[in-house]
Image (tube, rainbow, N blue to C red; front, top):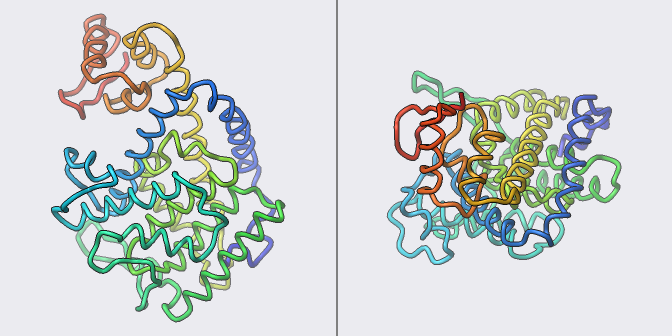
Length: 347
C-alpha cells in the first residue's frame, strides 16, 4: 500500500534497475518462442519447477518433509499426514496447482484469502482469514534469543490496508506507467509489511509474486523455480526485505530498491537458467552428451547432481553418474564426498 502512496518511491527508477528490466524483457520475449516447439521438454521443466517451488518455499519457513514422501504429498491425493509439516507442504502444492491450472482472474483480496485457505487446507486451524491478533516479525539470533524486526499493521487495520494494497496494485498495472515487475516487487514488500495472516505470510507472498509475474507476461517461474533461487540466497532475501522495510511504517518513506534489486536479480537468474536448460535439452546427441555438455559448458564451477538433474530433465541419475565418472577419470572434474548431495568441481 505505502509503496504506492508517494510517487518518489517508484520513480525515478535507478539506472541499474532499468538495465536489469531491459535484460529480463529481452529474455521474456524469447520465452514464447519455445512453447510450441518444445512441448515435451517444457512439460518436464514445468513439473520439475513445480516440485522445487513447493519444497523450497516451504523450507524457507522451516517446513521440511522426508524426500521419500514428496511424490505422494504433491500428487493431489496426499493421504494421511504424519505431522503438520506434511499437511502444510501438501497445502502449498494445492495452492500452487490452483494458480497453475486455471486463470484465477484479476488480483483481489478474495484471491489472496483463497490462497491462504488452500495453503492450510489440510491443517486443523484452516486458513482464509486475516489475523485476529496483532503480531510481530522477529529474527532469531545465533545465541538462540529473538529480536523484534518490526511490528506489522494491527489486526484491526489489516482489512483496510489489504483492500488499499490490492486496489493500488491493480490500478498501477492498469495504468501501465510503472513496469509490472516493479509493481510486483512493491506489492510483495507492502504485503509482508502488513503481514495480514497469523501464519503463512511469506508463502502467500511468494505465491502471489509468481501469479503476478505470470499474469503480466513473465512466466519463467513455470519452468524454473523462483522459490528455489530465493531459498539458495535466503540470507540476501531477508537482508533486502529488511533494508526496504526501514521507514515503511513512517508514512511510507522507505527505499523500495534494495528489495526490487534482489527480486529482479532472481528473475534474471531464472531466465538465465531457463536458457541453459533449453540449450541442454536441444543440443542433440545422446543423453550422456547432453549431461557432458552441461557439466563442461554451462554448470557453475561447483555443482551437484541435483543441479544437473534440473538442467537436463529426462536423464536418469545413473546416466549422470556414468558421465561424472568418465569426466573424473579424464581429470576434468573432481568431487568432495559421495552421494546425492556431494559437491563436484570443474577443473
